[in-house]
Length: 297
Image 1 (tube, rainbow, N blue to C red):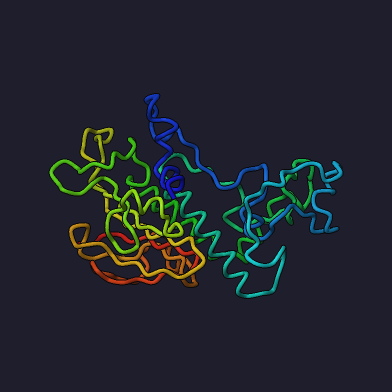
Image 2 (cartoon, helix red, strand yellow):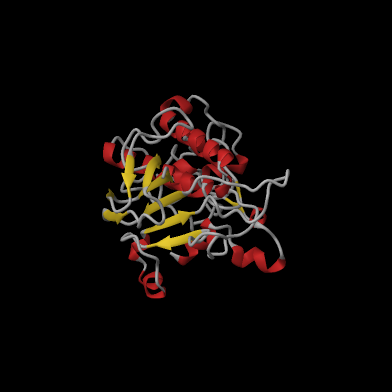
């Protein structure tokens, strides 16, 4: 969980000591080497869909392409008609894209991941000038919810500087307030202790992102003020109850992103999803879910 927190906040342990800023961190889930995002949630190992012999179509006797793909097929290897597996795969894509686009630093999105591009499990398609490696733009129709969700994420990042801060978080109270620029909370809504960081809670946690905690002015010398957000994350295999923190963090919250139920990212890009919550509310997140709330009061 500590590793996740470090990457979400721009990997200050790697860059801050040398005077660099969050934009020194280039963040990505997938790259041109390895699986596409669709294949990352569809295969446990490298495959060539045409012959079932993994990467042999590349002409290197299956010696190419890593075996350490860090992937999960969500229960079935490769293509499937299982509705539950397909829904879980889409939710995992949304979760991975959300953590990428909401992290400090520079996001790198692999071309085609926003529309479900697949290489049929081939994880080293450099030699394939054919359908294996091409971007099939028609898949955007099949994965319309995914492309809409990416549009929401990129607009959120553009419109809210709290997701692209010029300086690293300090974990200290913002001047004139008693709230930190960032706070790490348990699912029960209280600040994490060292013991709780070690216990892990199967990775479940709430992140408070203070929009009033910008450390320097904009290019015109004006103070940067933004909305404040709560990010609720449940990557575990069991549903988890989250209690919204005390009113000192915020009295009411509106839903901005929700990967719990389809249609994921419903509504026009940039428009809040209906749903209001108040401090102390109990929200249940199923397995592998993420929820982003914006403070309204």
